[in-house]
Image (cartoon, rainbow, N blue to C red; front, side):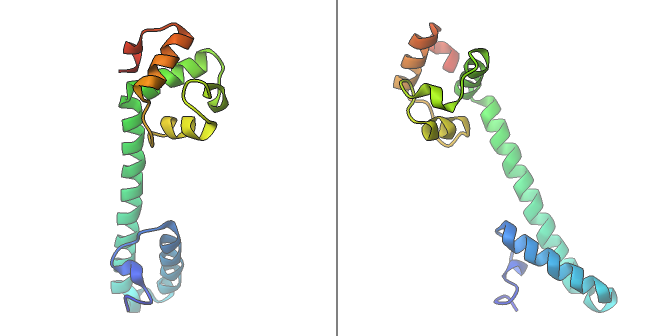
Amino acid sequence: MNSTMPWLRGISSGEERDEALLLLEELLDDYDKNIILIDAITHAVERYETKQVELKRLEYMQEQNDPAIATLRVLMDQHQLNTTDFENEIGKRSMVSQVLNGQKRLTFDHIKKLSKRFEISPAYFF
């Protein structure tokens, strides 16, 4: 059964969640006969969705607690800049996006260049 319904061990992707929900709809047609499987699928979907919400919340909290990201966002807002405007200080647009998404961190060299460009203390990034 685990090879045809691997998500019974736990859902690990949005695709598996969608498959489980489709099966759940079918099983609901004969609720009394399928109650155990319905319960198992429902719990698997709930665990996955709870985990996804917690991961998003954690990412958001990490971003909010990172003064470097917060400072960079404020500078972008104040000066009406976007991710393509930092090639000299941080690098290409993709690198700036990774920094803003918490995937990469600003280096001391980035901070030094940003501080010089905006005439602010590097302390704002720490």
